[in-house]
Amino acid sequence: MADDLLVIIPTRGRPGAVPEIVQAWDDTGATADLLFAVDTDDPELAAYKKHAAALKADGRVRFTFGKRRRLCGTLNAQAVKAAKTYRFLAFLGDDHRPRPAAMPWDARIRECLSGGPGIVYGNDLLMGEQMPTAVAMTADIVDTLDYMAPPALIHLCLDLCWLDWGRGMGRITYLDDMVIEHLHPAAGKAELDAGYEEVNSEQQVSADSAAYYDYRDGGGLEADLAKLRALVEEAS
Image (cartoon, rainbow, N blue to C red; front, top):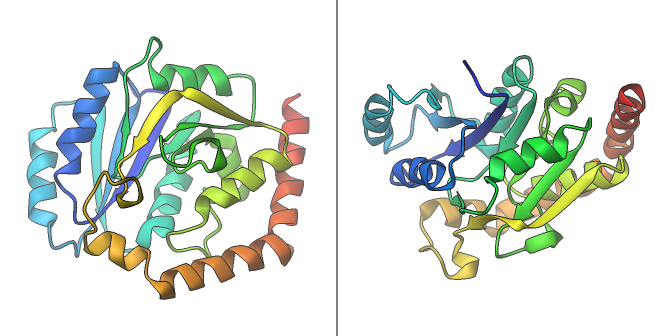
């Protein structure tokens, strides 16, 4: 039987992350379903398929292989489908690792979101409370908006939108002791590979920043918040 929480991980060029993330599930006692979303044009596709075959018997883990949509597009495509069958949805990057705690991190997510529409995030040991670089939310948010992040975005600024949504609907929680570590070059915890270079290029930063400000200030955010506030009201 499927869990009520699905964690979606769009991944590219980092097949070595797969066993590490599955190990993190084992180490933390997590029962959440785990979906790796892989591009069919990934140079490391064969390695991903090998992991998929090896993990076939693990009921928690699934893989999906599709055309490249970039991080936001891939996340949205999977989240919109999953929102029909899951109660909670989460996003982790392939460079995030949940860490053990007294209460498993996925159990904390369910507990925190059980009261109705909302968003929760933990401590990534890099941005902390400032930014939900990994996030979980009730699936009804995705179902209501028909996306998990504004589709004009490509890779960056999704976390800023999640903050805007959570604060705007008055339903966001930061759990400092729920550690989902971000193994990012900015923290000195990863090498600067081709993936990081692409998404942190001047062009990508400029494009996603412009798209975010247009969404925030051009009416998109306000329209989404109207829907989300109505959702909270209906649930109360």
